[in-house]
Length: 146
Image (cartoon, rainbow, N blue to C red; front, side, top):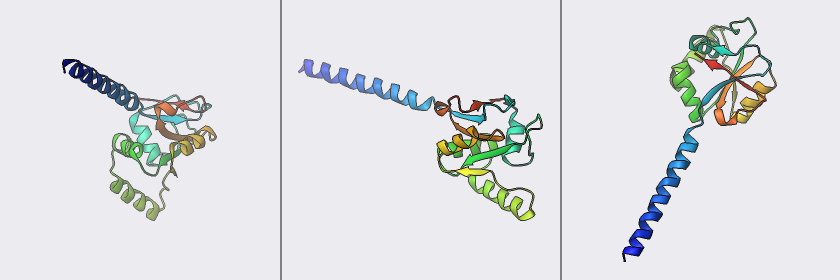
């Protein structure tokens, strides 16, 4: 009986260990801001980033036109809204309704999946978007946000 308990406890410990490894591997991906690799911008402050995505400013600090893109739903969008734009989905919808009605600005291009946004940024030197860090490759450049 003690052999079976020992085997069972080792099995449980192994399952817990593998679960922790799996959890840490999936939780390491984080939101990163991306631009085209040839875009001269390498960093942005939080305020400028927010203003670009809210279309309060139309250019990067160096004067290059900025064309923001965002996901239209999902956990990454929610993280972006909370941590970058500091808005809820409903407050952002209200904001864009006011901006459209007043003729001041149109919302950023929207994509259903990160691959679509990444492709948009990779093929448009003026584009700026966000993806999970584990999707980054040499087709896009990650900005330093300070």
